[in-house]
Structures are given as C-alpha cells and as structure tokens.
Picture 1 (cartoon, rainbow, N blue to C red):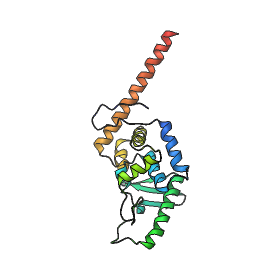
Picture 2: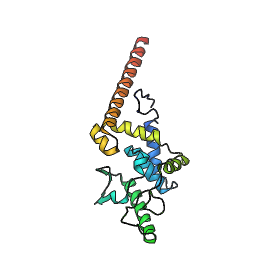
Picture 3: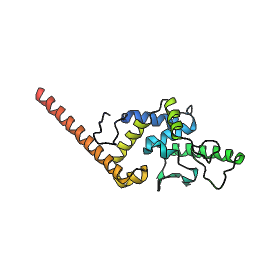
Picture 4: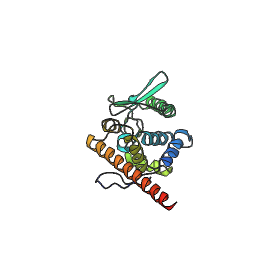
Length: 198
C-alpha cells in the first residue's frame, strides 16, 4: 500500500495489508516472541491502538463471558479473537502471581504491560523498542490498521474505540475515502489504457 497524506497530521507510513496480516499471525502464534510483545503487537495490529494508550491499559478492563472475552478500550468493550484473549489471560495470570509477592499499593490498578512493580506502566518508548527488536512494525502497522478500520466503521466509533478525537477520526475517514477514490481512478485509467492498446 502506497499512500501519501497531504493534510497536516495525517499518516505517511504504511505497510501492506499482507504484511500487517503476517505480523498479526506472528504475534498471535509465535511462542518464541515474549508474551508482552505478542499482546502489544496484536492490539496495535487489530485495533490500531497508539502505543501511548496501549501502555495505559489495566487488567481490570478484561472480562470473559462464557466463550467470549472482551477488553474495554476507552469506553467500548471490544470482542477479542480467541488467541489474543488467551494471551491476555496468560499475562494476567502471570501478573497475579507477581502481585502476591508485591501487592499493589493504595488500590492502584495492575497494568497489562507493567514495569515492576505492576502498578507502574512500562513506557511507550520501551514497548516501541521491544517491538522493533523483534522485527515488528509499530507506526506503519498502526496506520494500516486504522486505515482498514475506517473503511468499515463510522468515525464516531473510531473515535471511541481508538482513542482519537472526533475531528481526527473524521479526517482519517476522509483520507481513506480520498485514497480509495484515487486508487479506483488509477485502476480505471490503467484498464482504459489496456483496452486502447488491444
């Protein structure tokens, strides 16, 4: 995917949908990757979460109801794919063991991706560095996930789910629409040239 954003504040870095899909497969299936990196990569690739919001997530946002598992992102409970739900459950179980040794103070929440102790969040830069160390894209993967999402969801949902302002969500939607229109126009021109040459 090659897209250029002309409006200030819109993205210029993307990966292909295929590359994003392959990265997600690694995060969800490759047990050689650290657990926290698998979770971070999964949440970025599936929900377009910016890393600064990712590090703020706490374990009390996770809920399982029967066979379904949800994670509340901003104010919306999001249905998780089964593999990502299992990874998050495993992380929460590990943190629970840790917390018996270092109980949280003052009722502070346990972060999903914590420092030690678990009531302190890891820094966004540390997560970015760890993802990159394992060959995982960060900004371009997030941008591609957002681009795919705005094609399917209204801006108000994007705003709530991805933690961006309503204005930013509308600009993303417009950007995606314009880019898709440009793409279709290019395809139509290519087909016309091909017909003329035959």
